[in-house]
Image (cartoon, rainbow, N blue to C red):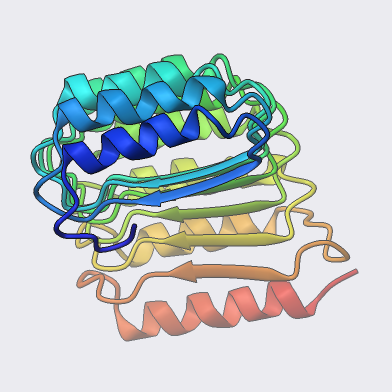
Amino acid sequence: MHRCIQLTDKGLTYVGNGLKKLSRLQKLSLRFANYAITDKGLKVLSGGFRKLYDLQEISLVFSKSPNITEEGFNKIYKDLKRLVFLKRMSLDFSACAQFTDKELENIKKTFKRLSHLQEIQLNFEGCSDLTSCGVEYLSEGLEKLINLKSLNLNFRACSKITDEGLVRLKKALEKLDLLQSMHLCFKRCSMVTDEGLKTLGGGLERFVYLRDLEVNFAHCERITDLGLKVLLENLKGIDFDFDLLKRLEMIFNGCSQISSDGQKKFRRGLKWKMMNRE
């Protein structure tokens, strides 16, 4: 249903009722990108989740759906709790300006019931009202997912997130010992500074099973050469298992306080770290 701009709440009623007949379904992907969907339609749709006893993978895209409020989102979260055998979850709230910290508090409550989750992808790009308080709520939920192997968080252009959010996220990540893939995007998070970068970088040493790591701080204008230097020192001190780690990427394009010389030194140091595998 991607880009079904004429889909209305009535159409979601049919979808929700149809899902109730698919109790053996294992994978579900629904994309909404229109202005016609409201809380009323989501309530009926989420009711269909209750019968999906065997569902293992779900992907829901609510990008650019301005007429969905906290009430509609909360109904989705409550019924997602019932999918206790879920292994993979992808939720996209990008460009939903109405999305707030309260939504992340509700997502936290959902995660506490989904202990089998192994892969999570959450997109909050452009959710301009999210703050470090919301990141803390999310972190409290993530740290309960002890079986998590893959984590992808996109906070691009969430300009109210500060270093405090990264501090709390780092504490949660340290409890996810089985992580094999981690992508974190803070591109254009203008309140993040060297201190946040230092904090997050200092927590990477715990991830002994990592195969794929990407951290994006592009266009974070408060990150400087000093922050990059400290991060590189942290990375050099980490004993990564290079038999497992195949990709390590740190992105700082467009950071106005990082000089070209600072970028070059960081890239050279990172290349040296990847090449000098024991």
